[in-house]
Image 1: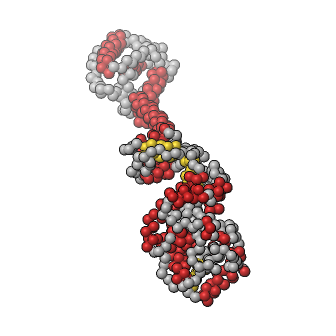
Image 2: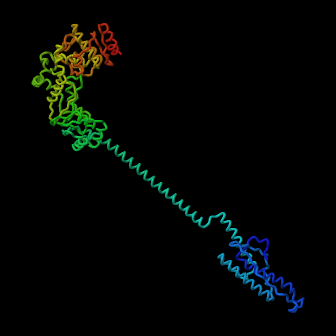
Image 3: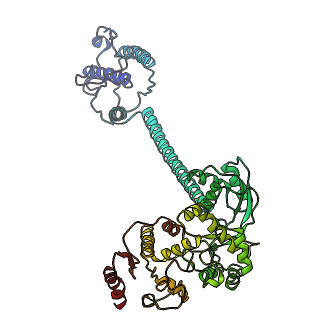
Length: 544
């Protein structure tokens, strides 16, 4: 008999439940026939026999895989199995039990469920097992709903592990990339720093204190690379490759072949400039230093200049020449005669010694920078200066002759212009004013000639000394008392002053005065304007 409230069927307890149901039915029948053996007499077999009942096996349709679970009332633990004496019923029960066992076994085999239960186990144990199975099933269903399966868990673990591995790989890859980037930055930075220092060092002179020049031969058709290699091999520069790229970057080109005197203290730009100018066909003795003769220097000033090596970076570097030897040579008649013979046009109008001239060669040594070598002497140095003057005046000898002037007159007037003016316009105006005065029968009236006669020109003098000169000095250089150009130049004029004398400005000025503080020249057409300018730009500033 099946309970109506049962909703689920347990395959494992099906057999036992059916058997217990049959036993209960049999017990009820036994209670009906034999209520109590003590109260009733045991009936005879004939009276109690009942027609034989046939129990047909009940066909039970089993659901595949889902069997209903029967809930049976709890039985007393002390309840004993009823004693059944009806053999037929027992046989029928055994027969039905066998059939049910077969059906259940077949169903169990089909479902691959290996339940094993003993009839001798108490009901409470069966019910506990059922409850445990039911609770386990519920929990299993919950787990199915809320938890992933083992495969899911395994996959999840693998996925999680894979993600962790990927993260680790990413972190590792990031660290590697960071290290590589840092290394690249260090390498690039180090290379740049090294390259910068390498180029900077290569541009600097090899030895700034070594001015000893060497004669270097640059063959025809040499490239900048080949020239750099030659200069590096000769210990003139630090690096030939730096020279190659430096000259290309600075657009130095058209280097000429020949012999060059180059020194380790020269910069790359100086060397490149010399290579563009061109060398000599034959080797020239290397220079040991330089002598600088500024414009407007007198012979006594030049004598001091030849003792100073202006080509050295050392302070007070000296040449092998002395001031006394220089002054002795420029006054030596033999040497002067030799020079007159060597440069006839330059010395065609050279004043004689008895003309009242102070120094015959004054003004004939051209202001410039001169090299000296190991073989140089005082005479050779002076001759180089005379040769430079001849070279500069050679283009103007014809012009001088056309203007009915002499070289000595031109140099004498140019020497005054050199000291009186500071720019080319003022030089031409000063020269024009001097010509206007001479054309008017006036003296040149220059203070410079008197200072020269007194031996003060070129020396440091005060403004008062310059203004308060002795205009009554008995000297051919007193151009306040004597007309004309004077006996000779008072200093070595520049080429600009010589040009100004040969091409003076056309003006009406007869006077000029320079501001004693600024050097600016102010011109006047008459004496009143001149006196006003002298008071304003000289006297007032001297008194203040």
